[in-house]
Length: 412
Image 1 (cartoon, rainbow, N blue to C red):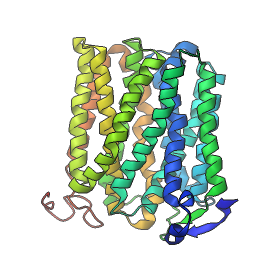
Image 2: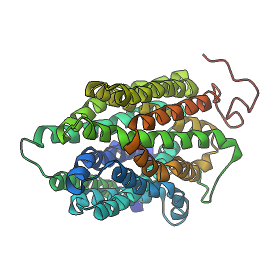
Image 3: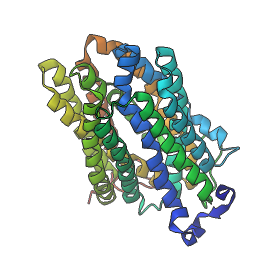
Image 4: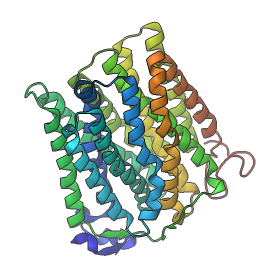
């Protein structure tokens, strides 16, 4: 089996292209959304039709989904006994299996169970994947390559969504068939990676213990706000389109298709923009955009604006979220090389602190006033903007915030 062979990262360039670290990163970037994005696209319609979910139920579902994210710090314990690359493969396999089995549990309890199993795979994969990306990509190329990885994931999801749009009604597909196919494709890619890829060994050994450093405080704060803000969008934006405007599976999927095409085109451009203008300016642009988007979401409920605006805002929101790669490269620039894996796990847990209680809590608030939910999201984006403005123009160890060395460097 190829993964029993260990290849130092410096020697990986001598391997055929189809066995290199970058190829593995792209294959994983494709494999994950084939399951997760398909699961997400069908989720709102599936839970409403199969288990008659309301706003409170969907809030509880996402609270359960985020519990493994809150426990992502457990990755530090797991990698004491297992290589990160192996954990990534196991986690992706769990996600594929859970997605394939989703429609087998059409009850509230069953959906919560399979969601928890799926979420363990998803969150542990995402934690390790972020760590591997930052270890394997050179700092001078990381923003551009991360943008290309986002585009690859969007491309894979585009194919999956395109098939759903073209075949859902034409062939009267079932939820079970679509979930099983998408999960099976993820498992096929995992099998290829296990059989064909060697283990890649980065030059800097990772600290295999809990790491919480004072000088990373701004990164932790931005992660916390990102998690809280993102939950409102993930849980309620698409749910609103189904509940308020009655959009069907194929209509929701068409909306996501437009989003994916936009991300495929724009993500590499955004990666280059982060490299050129810096993380601070990129994140400030992102958060100003999100403040505007969430305020307009509230207007849909308060002033009766229509489904077209809701669709436009949904697309814009996803484009702004693509700039989240700037937070990764900010950490890469300030981190000790051996801190990447344990800090990725800690940061993922911090990112999910709000995610554990916020969906369920806001689910009840949604029943009273959906507009207030989006107003809270706009406030969270404003706090994120204030934090982002504390990033120096050229972050590095010892210069993590504008407070570290006095005044910030002038912008270029």
